Image (cartoon, rainbow, N blue to C red; front, side, top):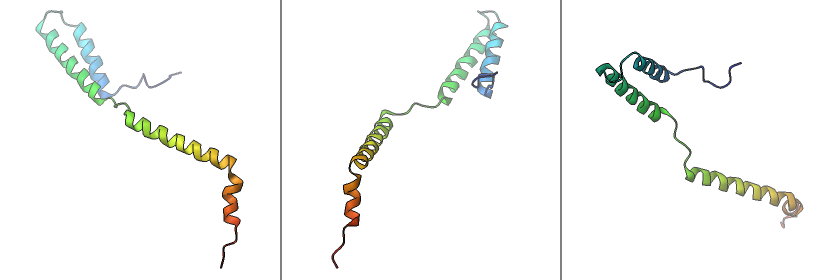
Length: 94
């Protein structure tokens, strides 16, 4: 069966494929070849700009710090549950 999305082309990928096929139809030194090659480089630049950017290091540090803090709270609650719940059971002076 089909795995991934390799069989689904975006319009930009379709244009790149058509430009590559057009390059095969022209002689290497001809003017049409140069025009097709220029169009292909422009399409590749557009494709590069369209791709999503990677996650910044600052975001990764924030997520890691939040996970470490969450793990510390869970560990504390696991070993100190009696004392943390005992304060709620104390009678308050009136």
